[in-house]
Image 1: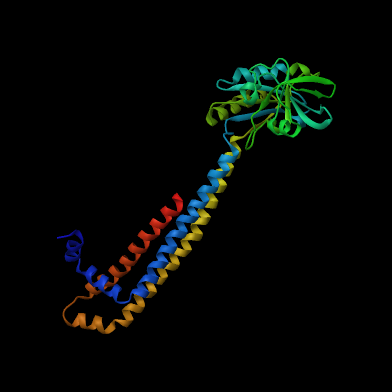
Image 2: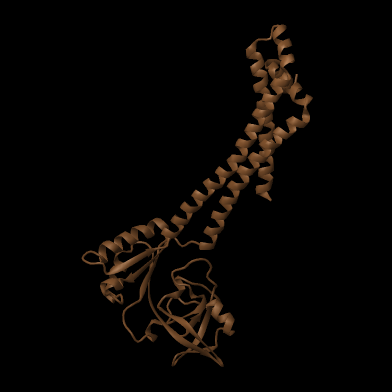
Length: 327
């Protein structure tokens, strides 16, 4: 005896429910189709929201482990001193501290001239890799050119460029940086720190191994440098990803809520089918009651019909959702 036969034998209401549904296949099929559409709508909108979140996270990249420490201009601090950098290094248990100087300069290569951002970084190899040439751990001479700028000016390693009145030999072209970064060198040039006339630093970038370590480092830096007055301001990129995840969580819940409306409509359609079916089969139900069928058994038969419709519609809706998600 098959499993289905044993199930029918144990629950005879299922036999009656299947027979009654097959008598009006068009109406039963339309009711099941409503369930399929409802399940598919919920699943599709949920997957859409998840895909949006994943795409945004991919575009942002792994930025949650970076901190930017800048002088607080509102309190009259324009530069970070060597002592400030030393204090930041001292409280940074995990991670790399990268002091940065920054200015604008006129870049000249042959007949081409353009205004570009110039970064003075002692250890650019910690932050960036080169697609051509090399990105040294200690930049003592030469310059590194961002990918976008190098492509626009046709710059290659070994070429010479002029920044204002200073001439540099290009030692490497940096890999293109995607997403958000505290220092995006795509349209910039990185030169040795000693090529800057001024002292002090415009900012300090701290890169930690994890977002948790970055948060702990930010707390330690605030306690150390802002103990008496607000000397520095900190910007944690992890706050961006946290806010974006919260936004997409709300958006995903909203989309699932919209999809749930389709499921509610499908449930109402099944209720309508069952109501109409019950009214049309009033005589049949009267005959069943006359031959001794209990009222509870009639209710079970009607509920079994609704359950079969929901089960079939939910199954095929889930299958279609899985196929849509995997494609």
